[in-house]
Amino acid sequence: MTNIFYQFQRGKYTTVPYLLKITQPRQPHTAPIGIFDSGVGGISVLKELYRQLPKETFIYFADTARLPYGTKSQTEIVQFVRQVLTWMQKQGVKMAIIACNTATAAAIDRVAVEYNFPIIGMIEPGAKTVVHRSSKRIGVIATIHTVKSNAYVNTILKIDPSILVFQVGAPTLVPLIEQGRIDDVYTLEVVRQYLKPLIAKQIDTLILGCTHYPHLIHLFRQILDNSVEIVDPAIAVVHTAAQELQSLRKLSDRPPHCTSFYVSGDPEEFSKRVQQFLGFTPIVEQSCLGVESVKIKSESVA
Image 1 (cartoon, one colour):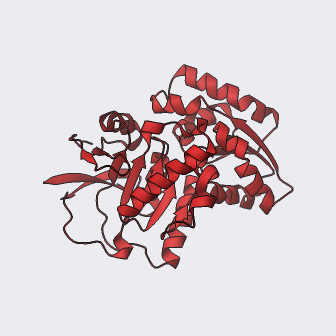
Image 2: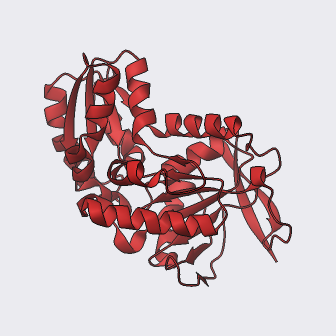
Image 3: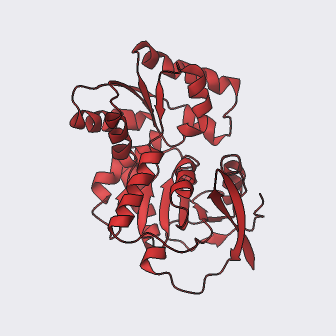
């Protein structure tokens, strides 16, 4: 039985057939990297991983049954993160990337020392990027939970106390993106309203403080002045992950296996929803985080 692996090469996806059933045990350096988010937001990080680490194999988990994380309490989010990371540990990952700013802000300091593999979050690499670019008036657009945590503010000011940081919570954006409404006129107006207070503060840099938001970068660019730099932390996050793997001598030097996609909710719905962001329709399995996963048959097409 064969499946199609979609590899990112030279700015586009190419298809490579491979055997679906892997019979040989993976060596530590060829073990997969786990990525998780509440939904499609982490796909922006996955695509950057394809670009920077083309020899790595990935497992993507979307906790769609409990989407969105931005409206949950810290206690709930920490519990969710632990459940997902424990599940990933059973999958034999060599690293996990919390591709969710909300989960990073709520849980990474607590869970990072609880597992025997490195865990990379979104906030610190993104914050360091803007500081090193000499930004002085930084805007952060994020979920309500991330804004209330002050995670970006505290991290940035710890590095450079002279920087001014302004935040806006944007709770409506994640649901709109999950619904696939990335080109709606209504979505454009919602983004415009969220950006108004940041524009009034004359920001020179905007951090996309939610992994869903890069899917709307064309709208942000349409509204903001060209002088405002838009920062997607995913680039810095993947660079950090690559450095960590290199220091541990766990970078893969072999061709990757197909990315495995799992969700806690409806796999067929996620498969259809994510197609517009990936450029192909993945095969998705449902996992109840401890309950045996159930394979959902779905065509993998370009």
